[in-house]
Length: 214
Image (cartoon, rainbow, N blue to C red):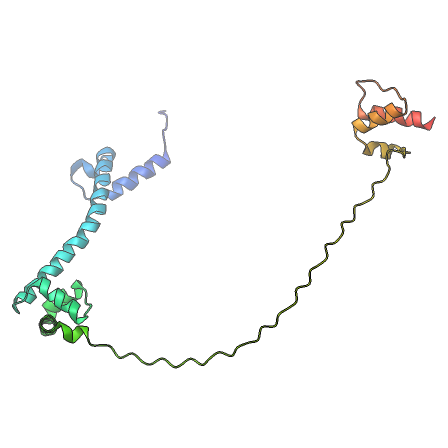
């Protein structure tokens, strides 16, 4: 039998690419290698043209707005400038839609832009009447009560008294087991008890306990 390289995982990956290549010409939709090359190229084109499409639509809207303005003897740039002076904020998509489907409304905007350019002071000096804000009532002054800061006396640290464990000799094996090997050796040295150098802790405890019992 031939050796399997990838198996089910490789098959799924290839089927995924061939599914994206559906409808491509020739071997680009049948052979994995050429299909993969074309799919990668297609994804790059799609990424680029998603941004290009936005530019193309903007050009189309400007062309339609300009055509509507030329019918009223006005250029596109002057029309947009007049709308800005008049304080009208309508995007190009809506203006292009009005120029095609509602020419009467578009012509009114053109006339308004012409008037704004002819009389700019009329639109700049007009102040929009804003509703008067209710007078704020003076806030009552709250007398701040000063709290006398009482300095807390520092607490004296009570140090635990150390028990003189050195003077008290352990009486049972359990007491000896609580000590470390180093302390056991010190205890044996103080009591003149000889301990072999290779003795373990259990052996040291037995030797010391026997000597202390004497």
